[in-house]
Length: 68
Image (tube, rainbow, N blue to C red):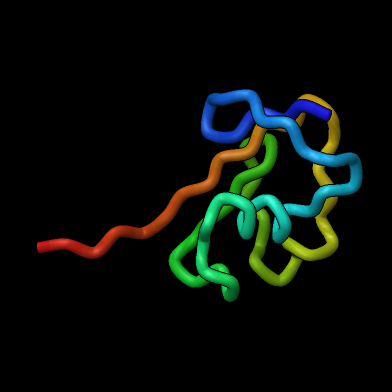
């Protein structure tokens, strides 16, 4: 199925969860420093493993960056 991640189409398997998507993007396994919004609503990290994506879902994945 197709979802929109940060404005780009991405093919994922049916039943893919937010946690699986974040992991596939190369984010740290614990999700530290990552925020996810699904349809404009922030998804708490504790809900990632149980939140399945649906066809056409719009997901924004933001990663904190340190710098100086």
